[in-house]
Image (cartoon, rainbow, N blue to C red; front, side):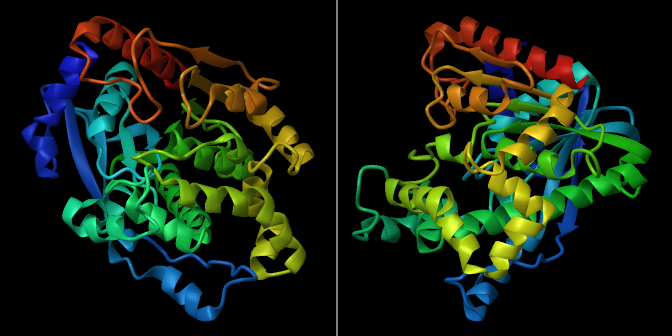
Length: 378
């Protein structure tokens, strides 16, 4: 079965649409697991105050109490290896990733855990992705411009109001992912034996998060874990998140300004956030991935240690996370493969399903990418 046929089949699959445990087909099953995430300490920035921190600290119940799905080969209940899939920014559902996870699972024989980033997927209120609920925001003067859409307005509003939400979301997700890895290792996860091992497939901003985790914990909690980056890998300064499906121009401008230049002023201010970014492993790793000149010695030393456990494939036509940005980060340590496709694609949808005349080459492109993914993570 080719990619497009598989995508259409899975999109209509009753088990996947029911969000309940069951057999997807004769070879593949799915289970859902509930999580009550532990709140993390959010270090205050110089412009923050306690009331603002309380607001961040989490009024969104969906973010702290959520489920995640695991796709796995049918007929087996316990495994010794896992692949954690991390998705892109501003995603609302797993439809795109069901096909990706199925291909990885079929080719490796390993369970694929589709883990939601904080305030994304089912960790966000349904209203944030609802056309009617977002219509009022789109009418406001701030959002009445070409790069806004009902799909990106919720994230855009939140990041424009305070770009720290981007950092806090990553901080929460990092805590959640490390807790999951620990469960897998210790055998406290129902699907995995004690001493099990976790690798990562990470796309888009999920790859940025994974890189930071590997820089911070690649020789400790994630020692031995492998990371495959797809359409990801660049410095934050080289990304361009302006998209009807990601964020609008004002939000991107605010985010870029704060993390590329403003963060250094934050460090000089001596705030709790400054202390986190200069003394904590995760904070140092995050800061090192903001731009090429930040903590280069730290970053390079870590990449030399973990380079043989990282593989990256970028797309030449990717405008959100350009291939040249990934090459700039990784090419001195591990080969970055840059591919291009003979059909119209975009970062947000690298394998489109609405180009009938190109079905065969889209199928082939998908198989090409995921043969590399599976070969590396097998």
